[in-house]
Structures are given as structure tokens and as C-alpha cells.
Image (cartoon, rainbow, N blue to C red; front, side, top):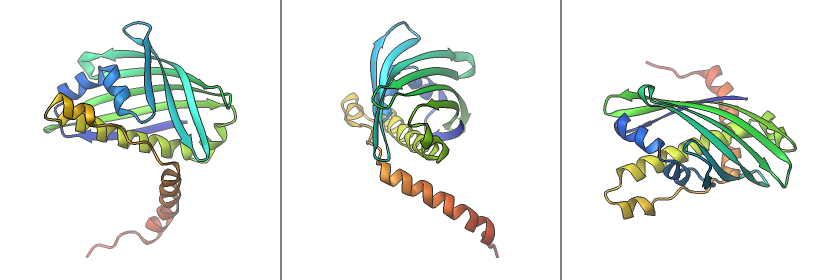
Length: 189
């Protein structure tokens, strides 16, 4: 499954790039993420807990990070296993920063492969909905932490746990409203 997203942060690209190179900060901004031991400067163990509908998952795995500072480009290769369901995930994510006035646009492209019992959710679009909500919460927390006046204030800002029912409802509404918007369109005077 291919997922493309982007978000904007009202901060300079240099500051955003430095933050994205802080692996602990990134984990702190991502709901359900826990950073484990560093295997090397570019390889880390960790976990990601998420609820997909009624199913709670805990993917244990590793991520390898490649950074190209001169291009503001990062490539993440991640793999993990949820032992309860036997579901495996392999993901390749590329993110690139682009200056946009006083702010920064972060473009993300991910290729995600699920195998095992939870793979059925991928066909239902739930994975895309969860990815969209994770990205929205990540960007909100990252910008808030980077804009905080003090280190103590930044430490107090935490990622909010995602609400699976709300994600499902938003996803259903967006799929239902799409055809109506195309059918009726927006009328301009």
C-alpha cells in the first residue's frame, strides 16, 4: 500500500530538520511510539502501540534511518511484528523538507506491507486513516514542542492517544462525502 501525505510547520526548515534528526524527540511526538536501544547511529529498536478498531497491537521491531542533510531528505526502513496477532509490517518511508516562506512543508511517501491477520484492515482503508491521524498528531506535537518557550514547557507537551472509533468514523464520512462533493460540486457566484 502506498501512502502520500504532507504537512506544514510554521518554523524554518533548518529547525525542523534538526528536530527530525533527534530520534527521541520524533518518538515522543508519535502516539504509541517507544524508543528502545540504539543499535548504531542509524539503527534503533522500538515499539509502536496502536488500536485498530477493537484490536490492540504492539509492533516490536527496528528502524534504520538514512539521512541526506544537503537535500533535507530522510529514508526510514522499518519492520516489526505484533506477537499477539502474528502480523508483520514492513515499511519504507521517505520524507523531504521544503522551505515555504517562513514555514516548512514536510512531504512523506510510505510503502507499507502488512501480512497476517491484521492485513484485512489495509483493504478497508483503515490503515490509511490511521496513518493520516498519526501524521496530524505528530505534526501538531512536533510544532508545539519546537515552539515552546522553555524546555520544561516542551517536555509537558505529549502526543494524544488516537481514538479508533473517531478514526473509523472520519474515514467513513470522508468516503461517503467524496461522491456527493463530486456530484454536487461547489457553486461559485
